[in-house]
Image (tube, rainbow, N blue to C red; front, top):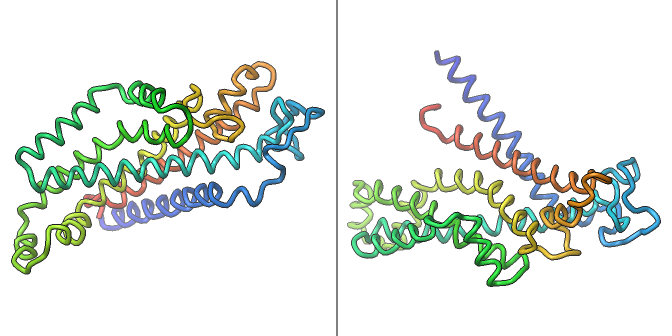
Length: 277
């Protein structure tokens, strides 16, 4: 029995290490990949357009003769970093709202939760499309648009966790010792509710990456010639029958990134699950 539990825990640690390392590698590529590109991702070569994948051009070239591998690597900076920014914003905003709602309760709790209900009532991507259309194109505006729909889940997680911790005896001791509300939030409540919030944020990376790519695909995100995986697929979608590798290269990057972060989130959730200890 104990041996089986030990093996299970060891397996979870192994998965956490593998997929955590892969996630860090993707983030490293997003930040520093631009310094290791084999070709200039903006350099056109009209004598070598739509070249098939080869040792010289691993993912082939697009209709302008630009190296697709270099553009996919550079596109990671826009796609992954904008996604991490978005997830950070909605996690921090939602957690802060949930803490305030759970701690103070009464009318403030009702007001903040009704506001979250309002945003949850709309289909997420449709609401983001409307906001992005009003704000105009661009990656930053896409992040703002998606921020409107992403924070309520974190607010509800933080609120439920705060309500569970609110009447704990250790908080009574903290109040009697003179700790301020801010210190109680940062030193006592947040560390105890952070686990589910962080796991949700990691699992959200894949979803938000696809939504940013979706907005870019529809022309409401990154604008050409800035490499971004969604906009790259949109630019080349009419080449699916003649040069499918041009569209499939950024699509493969999206699938790979979403898979890695989802598996990392699953492994982290299993690792933090008390029932597996």
